[in-house]
Image 1 (cartoon, rainbow, N blue to C red):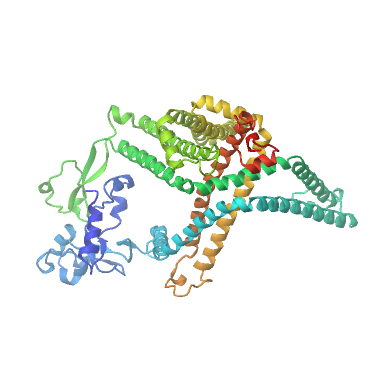
Image 2: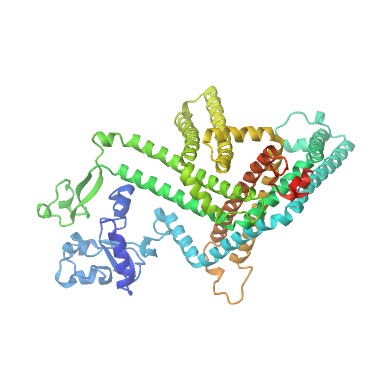
Length: 613
């Protein structure tokens, strides 16, 4: 039943090559006879006749009133649009209409996905559908080049991460110097504007209060305030660089070390695909469960007339279908209306849907936790390898994944549950805010806003704690609570290093995302707009209806690819940083407790292994 429409399409396309399209006699019945959910559950069924035809109707047509009773079917109907299994010459026109052997009317339509859809200029209700068809045509003709653009984004992201071991110091200092240069120019410009308006005696006392904010940019006091603010910010940045230069060097060294780790275990960059597949499984299971819960009642059917134009069909309404009972209306049929919502189980459907939604959030958070613990275990095995790469275990990502599944499922599930509880509270607050917004007074709005802000901050804090707890779980194998406590205390003892590393990494990865997305986006714009023509290319950009759709697809796809690659790199930096802090606290460079950090880090900290001297 649910596959009926798809079987019709396949029959039209494969068996009847000269009639590849499926034509609905009355397309409006797809939207009016049953609701959308019921339509989906019945495989997009429509209670109207469907046949394979060669081309779309291009005009309005309906059975003439004067021919309805005694007209000749051969003269009235187009045989190409009728059911091929009967003879027009031997069948009465009234019977043809009642039994839907030929369409009673049709409108101009276009072919889309092997269906016929009404044309936008004729039926205004299908504007979006027409645009969707045009967009689909663009994707159908440009998808190979969209994939090429996404592959370029992947290669650029990979190359950027691998080259960080050589370019990270240069890029970071260039960005820092560029920030200082921008601040210096801002100071110069503000002073120039201030001096200019001071000579003109343009003071705020001559302006007074006004709603035109542009006026305030034409007085000396405004530019003096900007000058002071930018000068103070510039001084803070300079002092920070002077006093935290060693920590910045440590951050750069850890970023370089992370690039080396990525180079030794390239498979880690593709682990987000596994996370994506597992999340897709969670979404599919949640959707299927929600759908089965929504349709758990017994189906209710109703007898209706597919053609209500005849007087004998107007009063039809029943639940038990027997075609012999409706001799005056041959078009009567039994169709699905809804699912029964009576009974104890049906009355608790809403509670079960809530339980299903909570289970989905928990499973999704668990999948993300599993990915973080797996990557942390792989990168930790790199750091604690004394002789690199000789001591790095074989297949570190696979080994870490198996360890996480075998030993750490409980800890990961507990951390995911804590985050899920906070997310549920945020959802409840959003629901309350949405339902009571029209009745809220200023105090209530302020309270709701504060609660939403607090729980948003709490969710961010829980994610930060969970992420570092999973790293400690991967390193030492202890339970979630102990690992979270140890990670938090370790980070608080090195809070300045945490802030410096976090900001330096964020700055670098932001620049990397900007480079990947901006570069690929500009390249795709020049290609899909026809400004770049490749020799021997059979793809013509002038055939695109909306050339910006492939460009938007490539840009968004490039962002998600860059984000996936850089999220692995960010996890590597965080893992190596915690390993570095543990290395500093637990080891002293002696033969019994040698440092595992790189020689570059030991040089920055003026440390060395005594056994290596």
